[in-house]
Length: 248
Image (tube, rainbow, N blue to C red; front, side, top):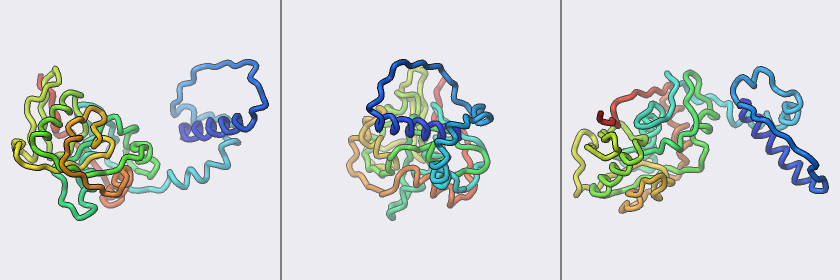
């Protein structure tokens, strides 16, 4: 809550400053304030007064309950609860236009910007996890380029992959082995990957995705797919399953 309030406060101050260009700054001072939940215990009354007119509209967007999460989930490499859940949701969402489920789901760790709370999951929780305008796309890619993608994933120390994927990486971030649905990747076969349009452009060093043969636009934002999954499943969960292993 304090982060929402601070954002609105600074936005309001910036707007006032732009409208008051006739004033000149004679002096300034600053101090570092750690923004934590402790600030919620003693909110600044003047800041609350400024924010009050905007709070109702913000709450109407952020507060609706979507479902429940059995556990708290975070995102980190090589594998994490939140990235596992998000990658599986991408596969789930890949069927939105009548396509069969994608062979693989892929999300970037850096794109998951907040933790999933344990217990009640609100619309605002998903907006904090996925705040960007990224859309879900399905790519068709040759096996040779899929192997290249696996090397891309190994080189960054892991990304969020769906449960269909198993990757073994060396300590120096070289690909040792990769399978899809328990089978060795065929260089002659074409595979489908449900991922973000941001990654489809080769961003976050996922260079191989730029070599996709075909791209299907789903027409949904990644966060919309996540929200729909929570609503549909009502109670969500995730496990560490050895999808990405760094060999000792």
